[in-house]
Each structure stands twice: as structure tokens, then as C-alpha cells.
Amino acid sequence: YKMKICVPHPYHDQGKVMQSNSGASLSGFNHMQALSKYCAVYMPASEAEDYGQNLHGIRQSFETIDSSRQWFARQAFDGVLMFEPNVDDVAFFRHVCPAPIVIRLSCCFGRNRDFMNDALNCYSLLRPFDALAPKSAYVAEEMAKMVFDPSYLHPITNGVNAEVFKSIDKLQARKEIAEKTGDQRFLEMPVVGFCGRFEPAKGAY
Image 1 (cartoon, rainbow, N blue to C red):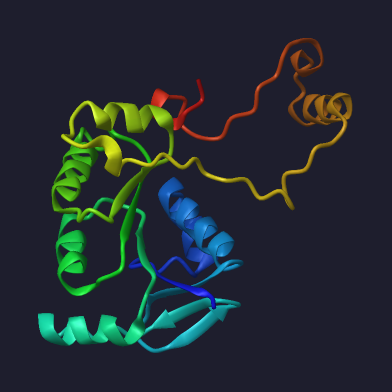
Image 2: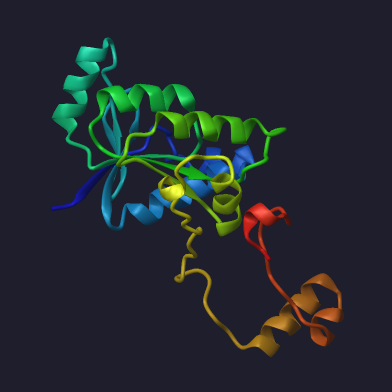
């Protein structure tokens, strides 16, 4: 049996994701690739099509609440995975889809604090078996200060593709970076690699 996951975002076109220059889109795309090794992932599409092994586009039928319930019953998804706290989507899914909803939270104070407002509104709609999954313990701790029941918060950090990011000789790596950048400090000082905005929500500390 392979778990079926519904992702209400079309993260299948790597070219468009790379052009968008959006960390959230890139994260969503990589999540889909990683999940497809273990689950059958279904994303919205105008017509049913396959994007790769276990990555599927599916045509949705959401004309009325009743027809939407029937559609989800036929699909028998094991879960809904959202990459943004979208209040309208959560309000819809909780009424028509019996599967648990998991919402990934990349930050807490982004977009002039609108992100936090959206996350709190989504929290208010969650059923007992749904969850918010912040990408760092910091985000979970900040969210926990503002909610009645922090048991809905399950921090899960982003993973790393171990086939791409492999350990190599540290001195050799320092030499290569020093050569490419023309900066000899890479050979003389401690080096820490980090990809993302340098802020507490990203978990760098």
C-alpha cells in the first residue's frame, strides 16, 4: 500500500519554480520530489497526467460542497499537505476532505506579519487530527505563545538531499571555495554554510 497525498499546489514544473526565484516554491518542489519516493503525490491539473514516478496531476471536481465530498471520498487521500497557510483552502478542505491537513510554516513574521495572521486563522479552523508543521523550533515557539493549544504544532525541519550534498575533504573544499571566490579567508577562518535569510525563523542559530 502506498500512501496517497493531496498537494493543492502545482509544484511539478522545475523550470517555472527556478524562474520564480521563490524559496517557498523551490522548497515545495523539492518536498514533492522527496515525498514521491515514499508516497503517491497528487497535484491539481487541467487534465490527468503523470509528471514522474509517483507524481500525478489530477483533475479536480469542486462544483458544489456535496460533489466535492464525493470527489474526495473517491480519491481516498491519506492526507492533504499545504505549503502556505491559506484560510480559504483550509475552510474548504476541512468540510469536504476527511483526511488530515498538514500546513507547513516557513516563517512567522513574514509579509509584514500577514503570514502570522494567516497561520492563526488556519489554526482556528483545524480539526483535532490536523497539524501545523513549522520549519524550525523558533517558529513553533513563537506560534505557541499565541495559540490556546500548542499540541497542534509539530516542527519539522527541511531535509537535505544526501545524494547531492555529500561530505568531502574539508581542506579540499576550503581550497575550491577560496579559488572560486578569490577570498583566502576561507583557508584561514572558521566557515559555516547556510542557505536562506539569516533570521531566527530559519533556525540558523
